[in-house]
Image (spheres, one colour):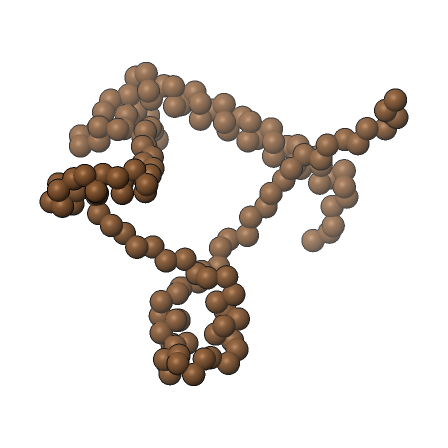
Length: 147
């Protein structure tokens, strides 16, 4: 593989931008067609579907839910326990602490379980992600002096 020149890189990035813009326009047209002329599939109240001869197009509208912990706590204080339990459930979530791998790599404290590293490896699974290419437009530098 030969190294591309700066000009060749720019040409490829520009072409990629054109393709993405065209793909966005096509997706928009297809989405509008499905929303206007599509039917609601069985047991899918948030979806609409339209079928071609070779492809099937489905538009699904998702809903995002954000729970405000402080407001939920207020509700917990005023609701009877059974009612609150029908509205919410408590979930504990863990995040990996910064520097955790350094703790495991070094000498462990005397009060640490003897199989801590094994237990940790069972508790934490790491997966390598696919490489991502990010292409950004470079802003042209101003060559005329500002007065």
